[in-house]
Image 1 (tube, rainbow, N blue to C red):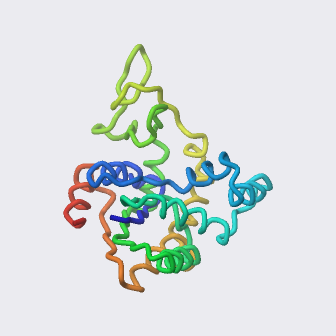
Image 2: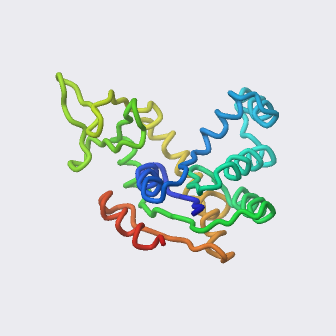
Length: 223
């Protein structure tokens, strides 16, 4: 089973991705990890990507798409891709590359969430040092961190918690969400591309519900 997953920062996309990965025993691939792997491995694509990253520029799609495609092709047992594509142009390029390579895209998952709710969730979330997909949030009782020796630790494994600096920066959050919620050229436009071009089932779920409810809705539509 091969899946693309979409959702704004704060929607629980990583948490749901981890649940899907475990259920179907597929690789959970994050776009950032692909870049790090290529750069660390010194591949030709990685070297080219590093030049752009070091200058603070976006890596062009003609470098990014082949890197992503190579990783997907190496995971014959199935994959869930998280964090790419981020734009309509990238969706078009990835769709063409997958078809040219004979790789089937089975599902697109879209987690829907109001922008203001997404912002509040980002500012309250805490990251576990052992696994970023362990859900911890200071505002939600069901996933609140636990207290140990006078400090909050991960509710799943007891690991040390931290807050990303950009998760506390309203302007930074707004910039990320500007890209995601853009339905003309941004990430929502990428989701709409798959909805409008057929061939792949798009599953949309309400991300404002509890983790368990979102997961139940999601699993009920995957086969």
